[in-house]
View 1 (tube, helix red, strand yellow):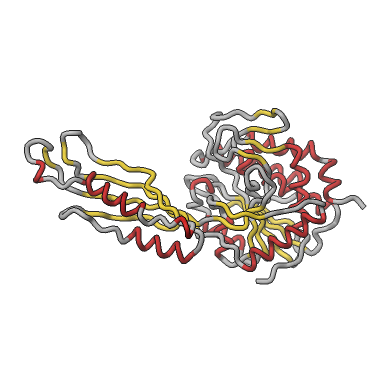
View 2 (view 1 turned 180 degrees about the vertical axis):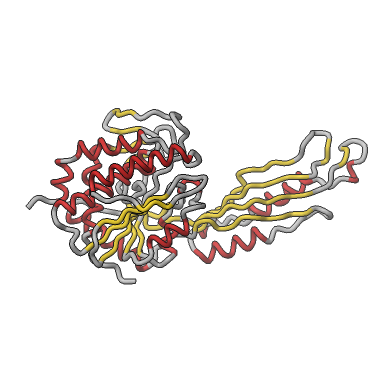
Length: 378
């Protein structure tokens, strides 16, 4: 009997061509027209390979989100993958060189999406989907922090026994991602009082001086031993060199490994108080992605994936990483979630972004084998 891996190896050229089709349909997150055209390309590929059409969740300003449902078996697996990218139109080219395919979003994460589609096609070809239902949950705004898709993702995933995230493997490896930091974004606005810096500086309240105090306070919240990082990445203040600044603003990034730290540090950031008499400090924002923690359900799914890899004759390791994904949302719902099951390569958000072409059939077969695994207990 032909295995899924055999089938995928025989169809490696078609899989590769589908990846190139999707990469060529460029999809900057903030360009609705282009992203929707990419979504149409994705819909055509899914229909050609799996014979199903999309349920379209229309958006006003960002790209439409797409849900594809395959099969009607009792075990429901959701496959999660976004099709927006960080790249503007024609910012970087697509090219094949030295066994690698370079291009905008090829690693993050269009190759993983195509691999997922072909994994399910391989199972359909072998009659392996009788007990399964597959949901492809494909948002268009992940690179923006999923502002319009979070609730839709959560609603779409409810009822799933597990979620497989087709984000790329850990860089330069085949490792899955068993943990991801949660993240938050905050804006700290500071109001002082303007005055002439030479004639009457004592009548002013420097928002820039207050900003310096706030930066020191915020960076003092860092707790590397707990995996917590606080970074003031943007600092703007003042208008002219000879004016005591009356306004300043800080952009703050927070990364945490667990929900306890998320609550503690979020509260501390929102508790910012002015140091200078008369200054005002206002904080907005909050946690945008909960952490994906190595819960018992998540680890059970990872161990199942290790068994799937073993059946293919390979070893699968897991690693926790700093960046977040939409899998953070489904993990926080208590649904078994495993990330990093997409393509291999390097250069996420970098101009040398690429995938390893020869790894495509094996990574695709791994997804197929994981789908065939046992149901994860909730």
